Length: 629
Image 1 (tube, rainbow, N blue to C red):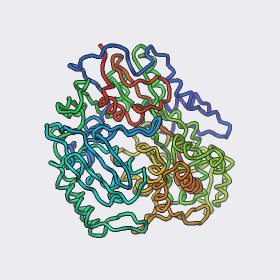
Image 2: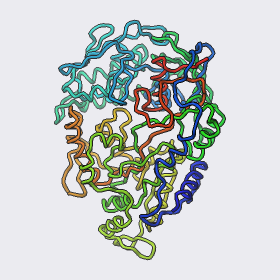
Image 3: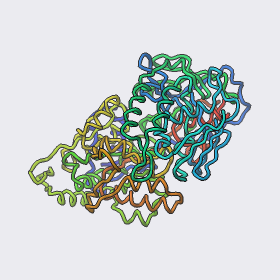
Image 4: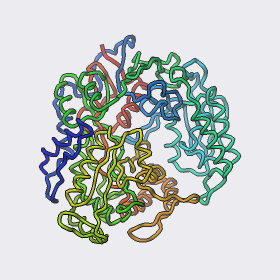
């Protein structure tokens, strides 16, 4: 298939979101592929008047200023103010309304910049957290160590204290001490980035209930880490149910961050300055526009409704937006350290056969699909080691990667693996040893253009090869249920992502979530994870290796264990990556100044990493986001 034809077809699919059968499969290994660079260049290399996120000029007074961006909130009556429950403040709102113990970035090197904290110290397995003086919630009440403890216990499985902390102790009104059972520096990644969102005045009863189980009903597992005993599991579950039933009005909650939610419609939400915030703010209000569909989002961006956003657009639309606004637009390319690809159902025929999974991996032309799925997408990991290339290449050498199977498109290899599985070609169709051509269901979220593009393209490439593949789009609200049902053979998902820590442990720890979704893995009722390697027949002690990776303290130690995980995933093809995501962060208002960043370049900067809202949050808290006169 010619690249221009594919590009137009995929762009058309994205514009209509659910159009079907617009792809023609690529018939040979010599098919011309659209490069990552060609699509990116068509968008970000548009020559613009402004070339830096930072704008020279005198800072404008905050009075009367309003920043418009994307916030994916749930409108009333379903929306509420509990951030631990669906419908409450999510990833797009949290950085605006909550402050963090530390602001974090792995770029250009791992940095924890104290925000709510005055200081932190980790020595001899003891982490000491000291809050700044005179911090206040948005109602004017003091933020104290009691609030910090409330947050630590409600988030105890997320921040890992449930598994690795021996005790949590209040030292004084501003200081909390966490005593761990190990010195692993990765512990800091999970606790120092905590946002303060559970005031003890509102969530204290839940925190106290969790704390009681933490102190009374834990025991050591086979790896000398903590787990809840049977009674503890029951009590924690009961507390979680009670917490999930606490649904305060979003407009009445106390927040620790720079802005407070004030008014909301089905289309937008307005945030005003927290009058008790710890530093002066340069923007008076923030208007969060709720995305409702691909078409409405594209229209809003084209109409200039946003001052700053990082929304996904089709390549053609993204290019038009840039070309039509050359005088005012600025475009930054931001790493997300996330992956998008296919979780392969290991329990449902025919993808239960490792040879079929590998054949499919060789059929799908990842290099052709990735760049046209969404501006900013680049080809994912061709070795299927379940790491984004930006993280993979930090820990795995080229020599090691060359020892693995490379799953770039290779139709001859695909034929070999199908024949190894006992299949044969009958006319234009591949059939299994029973003479059947089993259906292979590819599923993705119908509202997400990139999912549609990836799913449609892969299904059509497989059909063109002779497999009975079909793409079925699912509604976002029902996607989790479908993914965990085991009905699909290939579920588009984000396994192998390391968006929070940029550490291999985070990517491989995702097995607890994604393994129960598209992969449909069988998890033991008790004990650690042990999986059979379909290639070697040997057991891979997954949980033990996870612990080794968690405890690894030097780059060499991290690499050693990461290589073992990489070999396992390469052997088994449980996950077929298609993309690594970079996204285009667009500034539309020429008067809006943000931390310095050159346009049109992949960025490696403290401020410019993570989600759109994470970037805005860091910039707002630091005073680096403002309008000029």
